Amino acid sequence: MANPPGRATFLELFFDLVYVFALTRISARAFEDLTREPGREHGWGTVTGGGKTLLLLLALWAVWQGTAWTTSRYDPYRVPLQTVVITALVCSMLMGVAIPRAFSETALMFAVAYVVTQVSRPLILAVGLGAHPYRRLKMRMAVVFAVSGVLWIVGAMLPTNGQVVLWTGALILEYGAAHFGWPVPGLGRSKVSKWEIAGEHLAERYQQFFLVALGETILVAGFAYSAEPYKSGHAWAFGLAVATTIMLWRIYVQRAGQILGEAVMKARHPANIGRSAADTHLVMVVGLAATAIGYELIIEHPLEQIPGPWLAMVLGGPALFLLGRARFEYEVFGRVSPSRWIAVLVLAAAAVPLLLLPGVAATAVGVLVLTAVALADSRRARGAPPEAAAPPF
Image (cartoon, rainbow, N blue to C red; front, side, top):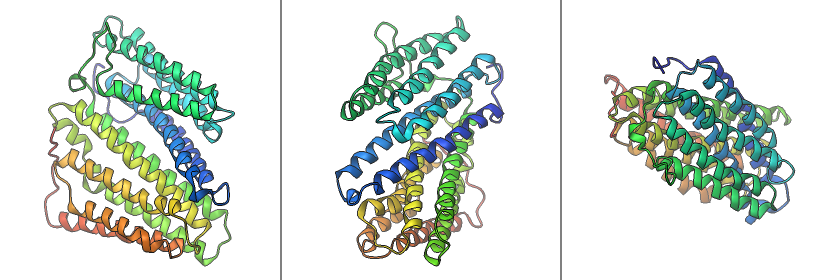
């Protein structure tokens, strides 16, 4: 890029809108796994169903992250870059449509859309870069995605168990290759620390995706409440769901979420903190997705005792978010507030007695714990100058 990009382009924001839809499909699929068959919520089917849904979410994240890194390394106003984003947009939409039956009728649709996105991106960039030194990196990425693409396509043609094995292997190959600099025999590898990126732009993209995931929790809560009779139990569950979302937003932005861009720019190797922040935001987004599923379960069954897997969504979602947020705080400030760990321990300790109480009580406990964390953050910042970023990278 001639000059580092400023704010995200309209095309990038348009691309993000597809993920509002895709994430709602992820939540709907997980919800069906938990409620489809009587008694299934107590069995092994819940674990396998959750694992398959997580696999689909990881694939969606891989497409979004690859596109975000591309627009943060190259001029997003150039035609090749816009072609990359539009291709990812269309294919992500197809993946979202395929998610509910991705392990049956629409497996091939999901796999082909994913492979087209991942293979076309490095190939388009390799052509656009010409003789630039980064062209070699794109060729290595294309080789890796072509190899993993075989696993995706073949897996889509197999029964469910074989499909899961091959798709899992493909994701392990891709995530591992990205971590180690896309090594390919005969073509070498590269160090992530030496990659040039527009750090503030990439940080903003992560912040925007977090807001997309947060917005998805609001959509799920709103759809679930509007589908139920407006009785007091449902109203309490909906109100607590909205309060939970507000607390999740507050904890994210105070204060690391506001200055991620500053932390990336201060780091000696911006690409390293960018890669770390990608993993951290993935953990937080998975936590938000689980929380959204918990909203729908409790809004539909506010006064019933809930089984363990349902409670794992209601309390485990916020706990996973807090774990990711603790790592996020370390990335920005080089330390972790004790309130994060204490809150996770409280949520874990509360799980057993909450199995004997109505589901809405579990949501209430989650809100109280998150509120306590938000208050602790505000108390630490009160009367002190805004804390500056101090990344340990």
